[in-house]
Length: 307
Picture 1 (tube, rainbow, N blue to C red):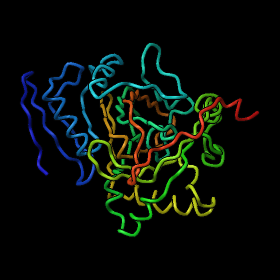
Picture 2 (picture 1 turned 90 degrees about the horizontal axis):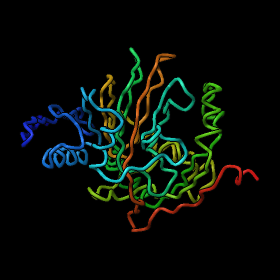
Picture 3 (picture 1 turned 135 degrees about the horizontal axis):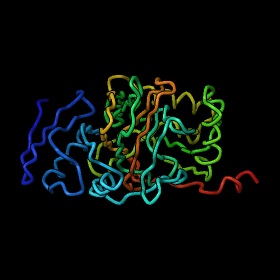
C-alpha cells in the first residue's frame, strides 16, 4: 500500500506509511495537539481503525497536558484501576527503574475489568540506547487467520481474566522491587472479569480475539485443558505474521486500538533507563458473536479477598 497524503486548513501535510501488510503505520507531517483540525483528526482516527497501531516521530513538544488534550479527542480518559497516575493527571508512568515498569508479557491493557480501555496513547520520555522495543499483534487478523473449525471453537469460548496470579512462578527472574510493586500496588484491588474469547469490534464490526497474560482460565474447562486452549490461540495471535516491532526514540507517540491488539515491551536493555507515559481512553463492555456482554465477577480490596 502506498503512502497517502492530506493537506488541511492548518497547512499540515499528513502522510500515512504502512509498516507491515497487516498492522502498523507511521504518520508523518503532523504536530499533535488538542487543536489538530477536524479533518486531520478524522484521518488519524480512520487510520487507527485500519492499521490498529499508529506511530508518530518527533513529538517532543508534547508534555503531559498536551498528550492528554490530544487523547481527549478520542473520548473520555480513564485512569488505571490500581496503579496511581502522575500527580494532577490521568497519565500512568512506566519507569523501568521502579518495580512494575517493564510490561514484558503479551497483553491487552486492563482486560481484567469489563469495559477495558478502547485506545491507548504511549509517549516515550527516556529510551535506552539499545533495546526496549515494543511489539504489537493484530488480534483481528489473527482471528481471520484461524481455520473455520478453530474460528467456530473460539466463537463459543469464554475466559476469566484477572490481575491476581502467581507472580513468582510466572516471573521467576523479576527483581524484589518488581515483586513488591506487584503486591503493594498492582493487586491493591482484585478484579476478575469474564470475556468472550471473540468479540465484535464496536466500530469496525471485525471479530477479534481477547486473550493475553491476564487470562486465568477458560470457562467450563479444567486447568490443564484451559492451558492447552490458551496456548493454542495465544501462540497463534503472536505469530510474526500478525506483528510489527517499533524501535523507540524519545519524543515518539504510539497509539493503538486496544480492542484489536496485544503488545509486549521487550525486556532486553538491562539497567538502562526507560520511561514512557500512557493515557487511555474509556472503552465499552465487549459483546460476543452471539450478542452476550462481558461480565464483571469480582472487584474487591485485596485484604478482603485474603480474609
